[in-house]
Image (cartoon, rainbow, N blue to C red):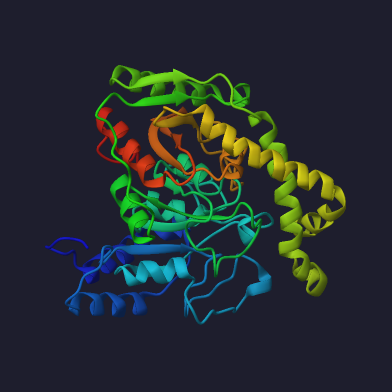
Length: 415
């Protein structure tokens, strides 16, 4: 439970609505905002004697996640007018902790492919905030809300966090309920969230019942630095940002240990693609069969993957991923986290989701990942870095990340 004095939920909602009114015509983070219900919920929360751990925190929800009484469009013409009657459990849990669900944020179609979100990067409106969790990232980065739900199947939580200069967290696969969330690839889909500080990230971890962290310290942190097999594909300012963060960590007294390679890692993007397309074929088969005219061509391609990726290839991908999970955790034993690129550089021009190559392997490994907004690139645009930990060490990873930011003298996001 939060400690008094409590924030006024009503005041928070009014502030959020004012910011959205002033900025969202430019940023376009939101597909739906429910002013009346949000204010009514806030008034009820302020009148209640008991206060939850997220009392009065305004939340945006990616529009592939069900919220009762709000549209659930998936940014697809197939779901125009669809209105669920119940919250997804990940939303209901936040409500129970005192959060105010403000509305639905824009997304790449079905959080997968097809239509891009209309949302802009608040740091440069000509650039993408990243996909597929575009609106959620933009809403937090532009100060509309302090918390927003995202999802990740490839890199859809971490990459937008990097592009937008905010904290983003993808928990270990399976720890947060995906009921009421559009399925894309069942072995990969993960609910995550954005916030402008790690304290909020950890508060949400606790609300979702993630285990309390083991203590950090008392010795020096040991961070493995892993440039990945695709280092040559990173932009010059992306390389400079990553190396600059690693050097700053070393100057701050962190032991930075270079990791030249990880077992099977170079195969994981190809394996991720095989699993993504085969499981995506299952997720969109019904729409391809029953409503083909309104289904974007990208999803017909996923259904056709049933013939492009054989059962044998799918089995190989799953088997190698299982081995790689165990091998990764053995390889980093004794390290507090692994430092890796979150994206190849700054946000691209336009509205494309961006390159997921630097995120997909961690998603396939089911590892928790947090983006830290610690660097800038060309034109002052944000470039984040990822910290990665073994499966189910989620809150310890956040504790390590908080210690890293404290040692670096960081008091907030890159904003």
